[in-house]
Image (cartoon, rainbow, N blue to C red; front, top):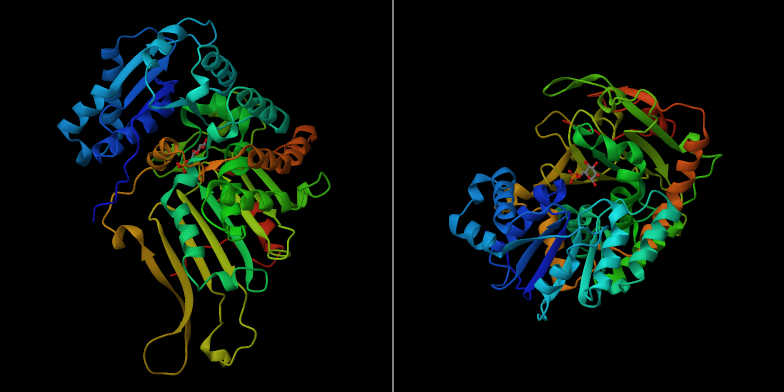
Amino acid sequence: MASQVIAVEPFDLVVFGATGDLAIRKLIPALYHRDAAGQVPGSSRIIGVSRRPMEDAAFRKMAHDALGAHVGKDHHEEAAIARFLDRVSYASVDVVGKAGWKELAAMLAGSDRILVCYLSTGPDLFVPICDGLAACGLAERARVVVEKPLGKNLASAMAVNDAIGKHFPESHVYRIDHYLGKETVQNLMALRFANALFEPLWNAAHIDNVQITVAETLGVEGRAGYYDTAGALRDMVQNHILQLLCLVAMEPPPSLAADAVRDEKLKVLQALVPITPETVRENVVRAQYRAGASATGPVPGYLEELGNSDSRTETFVALRAEIANWRWAGVPFYLRTGKRLPSRVSEIVVSFRPIPHSVFDKSAGAVRNNRLVIRLQPDEGVKLWLMIKDPGPGGMRLRRVPLDMSFAETFAVRNADAYERLLMDVVRGNQTLFMRRDEVEAAWRWVEPILQYWGGSEELPRTYTAGTWGPTASVALIEKDRRSWHEEMA
Ligand code: BG6
């Protein structure tokens, strides 16, 4: 089944930080896929920018290599690759030292095409790039895309937002959270708002708890320098996981218009019960991995990878959140994420309340809660765990089994990377899947007391062996509420 391609207007996309990891691994392959699918109009251009001097041909070679390394062999089409590389050119700009801006402006002059400037650089360059775009007259017509980290705390996030806002109206600012571009995250909205089945049950009267897990098997790889200044709470919870929580918990928006959705997400963030210095220890667990094993063999601990035995940066966090509103009061949201866990799995688990009264004999076995599991990756899909009668004669025996929809099995389409959708949304001018300034700041406001508490505490993070599900304290966090982390049941 071919996926539908919606035409976009011709555009010029300028990628700052074009030789960096994100551009090479994600942006260039995503743009190629859209081009190969016929979505990129003929005259559109992709202009890589970085400081180092380089000919167009050399950058094209880098782009070509990026496709070789990060696009599946099945999708290598000579004609499509040649057409894509034809769009690619390069400009050297020293965004701090000021050289090269004039030349970049000249390349983009005389066109009324959509102009997208993607800041795929460290956050320290956001301000000079925005200032530079303004000084050479490009800011007026550009849409600017920024990646996380947007700040290290509320104050620095506000400073970055102010600096961007000086030159760009909010309607031209696209703050990427790539989780919002994932197929199954979109499906969460379809599941909730395109079915009559769930929404009447989607509240504290019927839902017992919600769990969101984003587990990774990788360690910090080549990113230790960045990661050590961030940690799991800043890197994953403040953005990706809180965004998932918002989509699960928000009220139905009147439409999918950007502000309609973002208004509802913001209300959820504002309704999160604040975690205070007094409540951090009972609601939040942080930990760091020590040496252990991954699927490929023994792996070093975080401190060894980092080469610094003093770091207290957490590579795992589990926490219990609550939303103080009529829909969710009293329903715990258990969130956890970590590096070097046993498997790569991201999922949202909605556990319904027990039935009010059982008509079955003890011999039938326990009646277990229904669960809706939305699997983001891998094996995208939805499972609804229901109680049924075990087949065959011999009396009533109950068993929990899933109604199981695997997207790969149901739809024979390539699972597009989140960046493909998000990049085309920027060109279309659709901000629904991008974070608004007030959302980012509300998320920082909620995580900040946790960071402050850790910063001022003598207590070291707990540790866990690489290749395990985190420290026992994470299990205790949920078990003290007489619940447990969801595990796939046979
Ligand atoms: C990034 C984080 O935003 O998301 C990384 O900075 C993390 O640390 C990554 O590995 C996870 O993304 P995905 O799409 O692989 O789940």
